[in-house]
Each structure stands twice: as C-alpha cells, then as structure tokens.
Image (cartoon, rainbow, N blue to C red; front, side):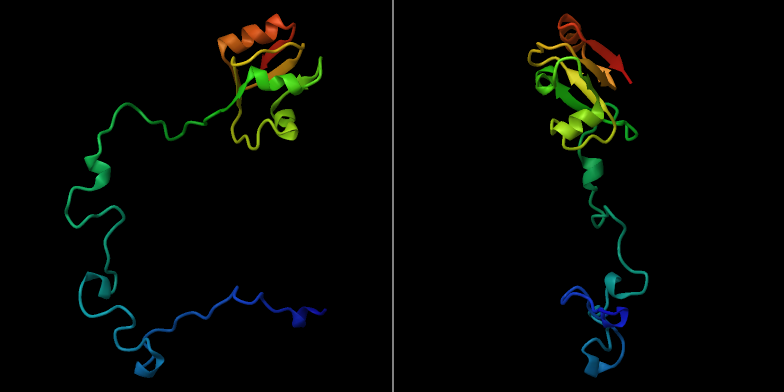
Length: 146
C-alpha cells in the first residue's frame, strides 16, 4: 500500500453544507435558517442559559455553602482493600492502579478505615483517616503521607 492509495473509512467523512448557492442546491434563499426572527439573522441567537426573560434555572435553584471549583478530589480506598498485597510490601498510587484496586486516580489517594488489615504494609497516600492510620500501625505497618 502506498500513501496515495489511502482513503478514509466509509462514513467517517462528509461534505460541508454549502449554503446560499441558489435554489437548486436545496440550501438557497434563506440558507436553512427559515423566515425572519432572531435566529435567522447574522449574529442572532441567545447566550447560554438565557430563557427568554424567564428567571434562569441557575438563578432559581437555592445555593448553599461554598463549592471550591479548584478542589482536587482524592480517590478513596478502604484499608480492607489493602489485604491483597503481600506482607512487607510498599503500597502507593501506582501499585493500587496496577493491582486493579483503582481504575483511575487523577489527583491522589485517601485511605479510609473500613475493613481489617492483618499484614504489615508501608502505605503511601495523599491522606489517611485517623481510623485507617490506627489500623495500619496496629498491624505493624507505616502510614506515610506523600
């Protein structure tokens, strides 16, 4: 196969709609915009969230507290899920992803105290709940904040 023989997959491309090129084209005269009105005109249309003068939904619903848009939510993992790792191993974000405990971890891991831990592990995470830290240290391991 040569580079000049390459063609796109069937259905993956389509022609651009050419409007305003005469009545025979099927997109002539009003160019698919209909007759009159705000949406038919150049630059016409309403901004996102505009509801024709009705109070917009974003302003109608009650708002409480503070929502930090810059917050980086941590992925939660319970202490019980760490039981699959062998004694003495170091468990971090990468190990949790490799073993399948986590499918994705964008910002970091927080270890929570649900479940039991029997073997000694060194656990490296962004944060620990107090009960999780106690269970890890009671099993003879270490809880390291990274």
